[in-house]
Image (cartoon, rainbow, N blue to C red; front, side, top):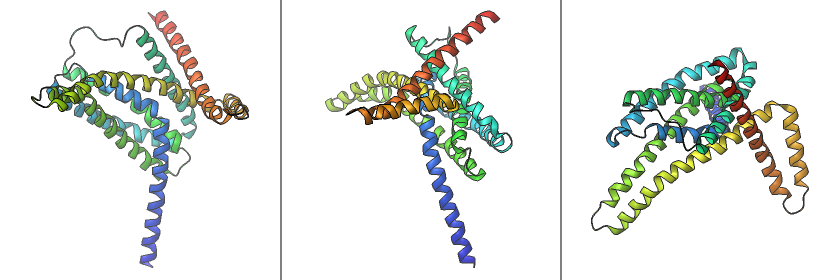
Length: 292
């Protein structure tokens, strides 16, 4: 009897872990836009810090990020348990905010880069600013993950949210640590006397570092429109049906139908995201000017 109970328990645990793994994978896909932006933003947050203080600053922000998620995860679970109808509106707001941020980033890129504060910012202020930014991005990740697990049992929701919170924090800040040290590694290798191969690798790393940052920024921006637009589309049934019908129609086109049926929904989601983002930027800008 005891053996049978243990096997049942192990089977339940295995089933739970399978569900968590599947839902974590789906959540990672949904949050790709935020994660890309999270990487670029946090790597940029530590720019200007002395080389020997970069890793301590990243560690301090990572601890703040875990605290943020320690606040956000119970809040998300409470919403799911007591006011589940709020999940869809929050998802829509999260999707709209993703589109808004993407549009703002495109505008900033066109204007010559991100706005920077005047004067030097000390280390403590950088850490506080990075943690505040992380709270917004973490909230988006948790809300998007909650949308994926909304129909799952409470224990599955709990474990999936905690798993995502930990994996995202470790993954993002671990990768940020690598990114900000690429140029240091390149500089170290270029200074190795008599090691032509290593010096060549060093020069390549020095050249790669700024290009990687720019690529991350662009990938994150594009993904924000695709993910945010997709959330908005699925929240408006009539638009979702229209896009689905368009994809089905394009599938009948000879030769390229299969490719088009895959690309069309993605491109239309992105188009919806771009339109929604720039409309939101326009509305927010008008409201801001009127309130001044």
